Length: 132
Image 1 (cartoon, rainbow, N blue to C red):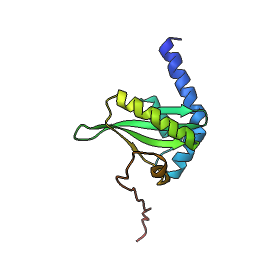
Image 2 (cartoon, rainbow, N blue to C red; image 1 turned 45 degrees about the vertical axis):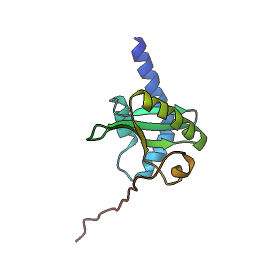
Image 3 (cartoon, rainbow, N blue to C red; image 1 turned 120 degrees about the vertical axis):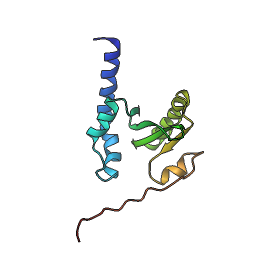
Image 4 (cartoon, rainbow, N blue to C red; image 1 turned 30 degrees about the horizontal axis):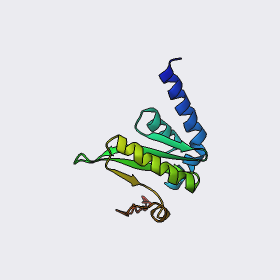
């Protein structure tokens, strides 16, 4: 097996180890996607996994119509100190890729624990029924 294939296999093994942390975040979004969707995004290089012993963050690199590139912290699960540590390393990683911002989709409590962030918007959701 080639060195890149071994690295890729280790990365996918790490994702499988982190599934319990990520699954909790997937469960909070109300069925918009499954862990299999997240796995597919990572396997197709559309998303990235960042992990520690008991935590994981899944990111995406996004570009706005005006060309601004940012890191989107899409899903996170685990223990708070590790997630805060991951945020610091994700910031450095994003800078190395030329990103100008990090945006986090998360609970309101993250705003209190992450210095330097401001609330830009809130996502509100309502289930629609098809009854007349």
